[in-house]
Length: 337
Image: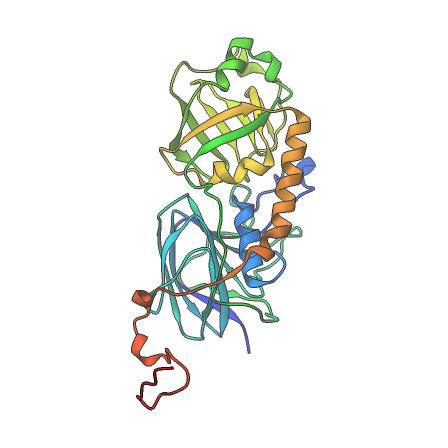
């Protein structure tokens, strides 16, 4: 029997994403993959499996039907979700029986929600990954009528949840110096850590624009810097003096000057910052950045140990009276012991 997820409706920014394609930068292909890779790891932990390809939903989800009995996990930026009309909890794993319809509405916190499945999504593999990289034309957005193949599921938990720290409302970002940091005046390097930035509405999988609450940033002759290698997290200063934090599908080389680079452990916070969220930068040493990366990877390994049973709110159970709420029986007599 084929295993598939049937798409009846999908938002314009719904794509299949995994960890991306490392190793192709010399050929002009950036890594790509999920904007919030932590959300992929959380989905895998909830389903008791290794990380697989999942649906990334930017801003709004869609309407999906289970073509067979499925297990699902909902992670990342919380979205309003229901199964056959009954609300379901985010940051949790649920059973999605054959024929059941999963509705995922607009994002309520953060920017990107993720739908992981037991066994993972298995579209065609291209250059070693299943993720869509729309900037270079690898894969495409998910659309109504798609029947997405799902891999074999060895089984595991459902009705479980995972408590997550808030990374969905902006906050502090740690940065290290880039190759071009010293091109900027000392005053601007200092001001970077003193300025509050607002996440602009202009953001996509290539980069996120931030608007400073004070003077713009830039260097004399900054628009004629020789192009060199680019990496996700680089803070690129364009002509208007507002920084762009480069993200999963960024270009591989660039000529705009870069004031600093956000460390990888903090990129999920950038990805999930909604429009209007406030962000701040602080320089850290390379040793501090490496320690943060080590702590981040240790936290990923700990995710399976943080899974808890999901206890449903009775108010969310539409057919509450059809459930057996108490086991055993009583003859109605009271005995005072």
